[in-house]
Length: 154
Image (cartoon, rainbow, N blue to C red; front, side, top):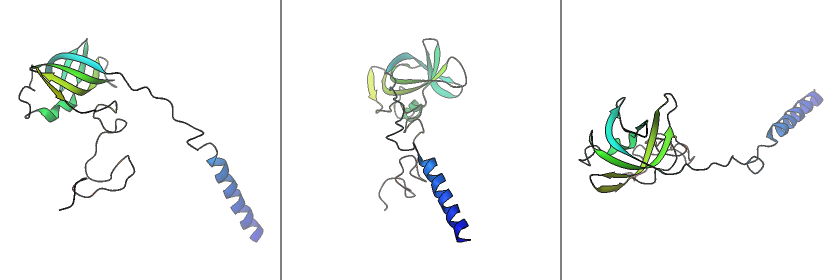
């Protein structure tokens, strides 16, 4: 009986060793990713399928990040002429549509820096996963947040 138990333990250990082969990050480096280049588009703001966007160069761009400026920057309204600098991400469902992650907005002769945004996807965040508030900290593995986000507890 002891021999059978020892053989089973040895088989499980050997199987684990075989599975673990080649899983080291040093042995399997991630594929090199070239960040997308910055693109400049200009046009008039309009609603595209219920989202803020604009049409430029034969493509309809959704610009969800501009929603945070509505009500704070009075010039951000339908029909306003804008110039955006940022990252374009192709739409996945419909040809001729794309998402645009702006880093700089020029409207009515004023420039607004919208932050780095980065090539992380249409809603920013890390690797296009978007930002998260409350709940688990998310993708960076730092553990759970408090009920009020990252700020101090009062």
